[in-house]
Length: 81
Image 1 (cartoon, one colour):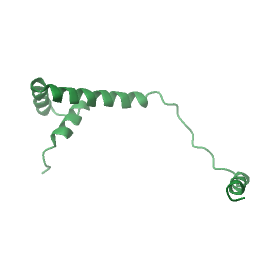
Image 2 (cartoon, helix red, strand yellow):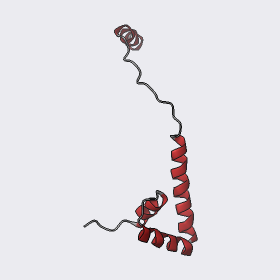
Image 3 (cartoon, rainbow, N blue to C red):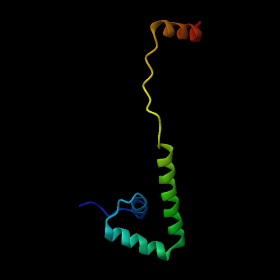
Image 4 (cartoon, rainbow, N blue to C red):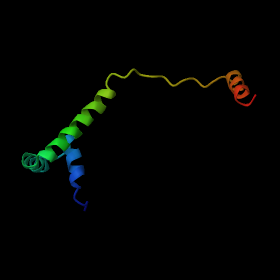
């Protein structure tokens, strides 16, 4: 049996849309009663949205090819003379 989630975990799950209906109703009731809690959930939701926007439409990247032995030797000479 899993321990009950902490209140912060429940708020994060709510912001992520991962709660079942009964837990969601509980959080909504608590949000109606507590303006500070409502603000915290708003900030969590905003942070989630900003992170999602940061990864939206990223170009696909290809890994850089390994440097040639000539480039490695030149780099080594610059570092160690």
